[in-house]
Image 1 (spheres, rainbow, N blue to C red):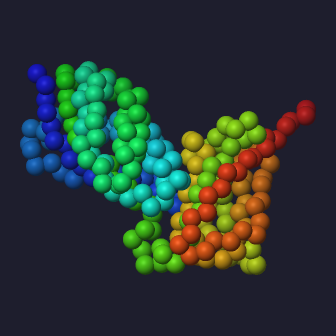
Image 2 (spheres, helix red, strand yellow; image 1 turned 180 degrees about the vertical axis):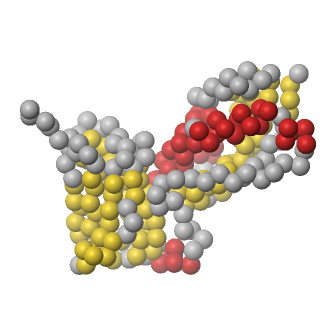
Image 3 (cartoon, rainbow, N blue to C red; image 1 turned 120 degrees about the vertical axis):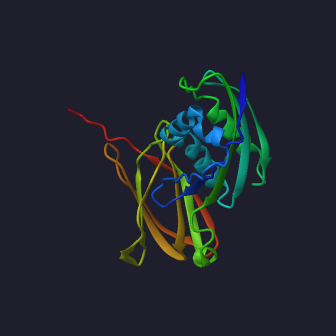
Length: 229
């Protein structure tokens, strides 16, 4: 028997300064749905594999920091495999965003799920700080870090300091699995960016300006340290 569950919880995908996300769960009103073990299995898999969705969100925010809204994705699962999925609604203004989220979900296998099971998953996204008063007066820096072969480099630390005052720094950010980084709420001014990761030569990008309300996007290459021993 196929179970149809309108499973609405708020998945708030915020791009925080430390590149993490938070999932807020709203209790369901349907007792049978609440007691369904598939709900718990799916939620646990979602938490464990959240980076699959978060990477998509960061990829889109790298290109468009203004992306904001909710995508409702309807999914049909058969014995842990996603048999079909569709975008029920998408108010972000970017059709590709919902379709790319589905592509990430299609890679999942949740063997604990029983029978045929259907859910509707809302994924809400907005870049961090967009609702703060200083957001319009600040800038945004995003980009991607790759090695000399063009492969993304995960875990690169990127630290900003004021060009004319090295002691004026902002909390660092780190690249995700795709080498993407996002930093918001940067005061307007001239900045220096230092990129570091063990096993790579550090790189400094000096003397670039960020204006209020501006999005600056960078592609950065790090060179591996060659051990001659």
